[in-house]
Image (cartoon, rainbow, N blue to C red; front, side, top):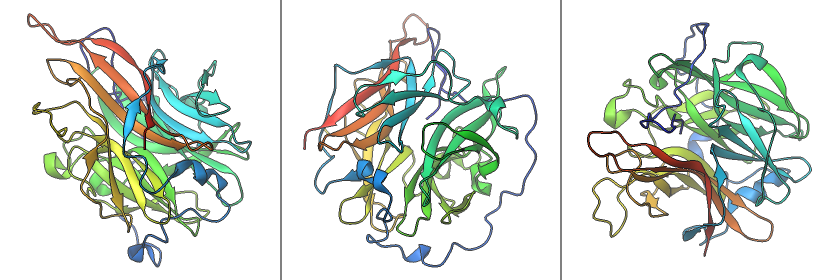
Length: 371
């Protein structure tokens, strides 16, 4: 989820943009999905042979449902974590640097636990041969069959005067080892007609044949789909070894208020979709709790069990009374069996005397599974 914050009134949205208009396109749903996609079952929702990185994104049966915050961990002033497993087994966390949010930044780790920030942005919009807006807000990686990496970067065109996002598209970069990346020409995905040129927050699930389902947010912060049908989780499809994605499920696959999808394999078959949830918290009388990590499961990639919350939050950072929000959950399974959930943490104070709320704390937090 993208946002802009600071020691000033909270303004939701890193809805960010650039000076040149993006070429218009026909974003309609083109063609039929490749054969077999409509017949997906639990056995297809498993990583392909050779995708060794997948072990870090597999949830053991019965685990990953009970979490406790790691109060000793916090990466200040970084947000929107997304982790890449490099060719040498180390980890790169892509993130937004709130002190310099125009680029996509990174942090390095040997163990997935301790992180060292890079000295400069991984990519800026101007690094690409095509128009990639004026912000790089989010990103993910496609692990290719030949061992290479395709980095997808959420390029955004923000009208900074009014704080409105004009468009988003996913630019690309490639790497042989996940260590250093070279920009590529062409957009990987520009969304469907229902996305209002605003596809956001992508994360793929690689299927057994090296194709991929890519879960993302459509028409986020747009009025295009309305409250019930807009701002939801949708699915794009990528054929094996291809350089672009096409729309697959163009309507919301989860109820309103579920955001920031992060698919993880279920051991033995099926998929768990970790995400940001705005559902009520069991036992909490608050009518509007702050967003926090949730999950739902699927055996066919597109129909889900009822979503449930995973972590309690205090208050709501988006409301006048202030409080917490936990956004952008990212699941990681370490080789010693530890399960981690990284997330964006926001803490906002209570507005008073007609004054708006202000940001008190922002960064990346973490929870550990107790089960």
